[in-house]
Image (cartoon, rainbow, N blue to C red; front, top):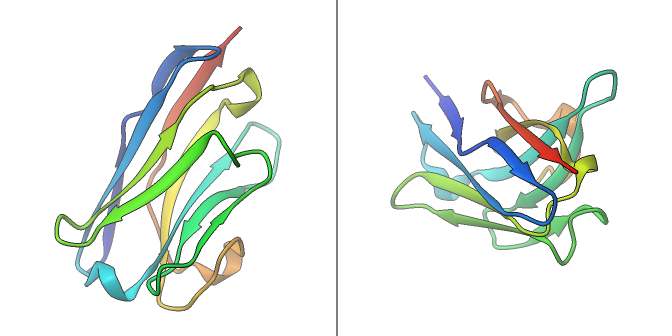
Length: 122
């Protein structure tokens, strides 16, 4: 049974930083593509960053230069370091895992966490 649990969300002022963590169980993390997605009220879920098992990394244009995705296969954890946060970053953030290289395709990810709320105030 695969389980993903996000943590690290909260309330932060614009310009601040947060580090999100996703703890995985029931899988060999090194064999999975890992992604971070976000969804704001009334909007569709979008990919923020993804880390393929072969080492390739994808960032959405809105995240480039501000966010960093990293994984620790031994600890079965994937991280999203978010710097210079903006109010438009406010959303529920989800981690997801895929056996294939899925990058930003929501439909390609089979396993999802429950999400963690990130709120950026101005």
